[in-house]
Length: 510
Ligand SMILES: *Cc1c(COP(=O)(O)O)cnc(C)c1O
Image (tube, rainbow, N blue to C red):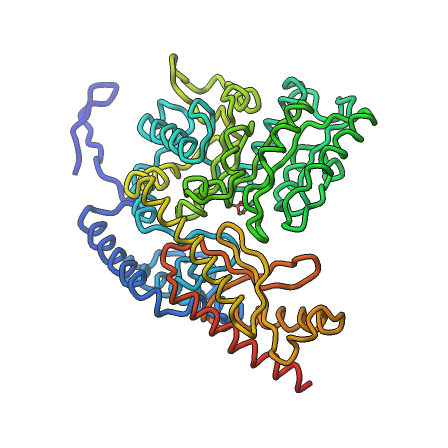
């Protein structure tokens, strides 16, 4: 097609209204390819329980199937066969954390509504950075933040934003605490100008985000005081108070205490109520890492200390864990929204920011261009509702308790901890039962269970992980998975015991 046009001297000219853009796709082609893709994803979801959780293929095999050493294609491949080929590759060589027997680490099974939401979000391609650039996206993110705050019991007047995951959410929390401790001066002067040394306090069970955050923030990991835990792996608050007092006497500045609401290893919830009081007394920022456990607060029989989340100055959460959002979706809430702004805002002259009561999200966090990840969280909350989530999270916790009970009753298993939806246990051969606690036996059981975990992970039958509990190597199952049922708990026990017998026999034969 072309359109008549007159040039600067009034001569008639013809300009093309079309362009040969290889990325463009006509409506019908898009529809056909999209329908076919949705069909194959639906088949994948239906067949998921009957597939292996993962295929333990060697890296060489994966690279060969991908043709990993091939250069960029000079001319693009045809759409339909390409989509089919890559789908098959992904279906064959992925670990499915949506599989009912995926119980490793802390990863949520992705809710299908989130898959549709990501598709829709990409189509809009909203850049949720300034309000004007994404009016709908910004308002959806703001409502998502209020909804999350309401769910977990943080005042909805808080500030907050979605980030990539728990690590980023926690890092943001630490940066706000750092700015607050220095009256914001640190943003200009840097930490080197601080006269009193900043000190952060966290239990020894804290996730490694803290080292990364202290490093990134320029405080350094040496500034962290690792507080010991009690026999249930919860922070020992008497030890916390002593550490703070000692540092204050030495002229240091305790600026941050981290409470964990659901530790990675065992799901331990720190005594948040007591920590809140200690923070008030010391004038320190109270941050809660609730990446795993905060959402459990909507369940009636949640650990009682979760009721004190609302006393934290900042809370990190992970919708891609217990809100079952597809990765990535993390969230940080800051009680006083201005403090988030005080930590991050710079106003460039190239943005038309607009006036009035609007949120420009680039001012609230480290990112500039920001994906519309809020849509998958918002749509899931809108579609599933509070009661739906309370039911699913409650069921996950119940299943973990059920597994703990099964391990207790089984004569070849030994149950360890059970908190939130994490259960730890280990395989103990019948004939070694009487020698548990004996030094040589313990050494052997550690080796046996470590080898056993490797076998389980490579079997494709189930994925669990491990936790080291005071030197004891335990197996660890974590249920953040709305597809898992009671029958899967029985199945897991059978898998562990049957592979446990094999591994023990093999180790004995050495
Ligand atoms: C998962 C987790 C993190 C890290 O979150 P990511 O989403 O993996 O970045 C931090 N702390 C706790 C307690 C977690 O469970």
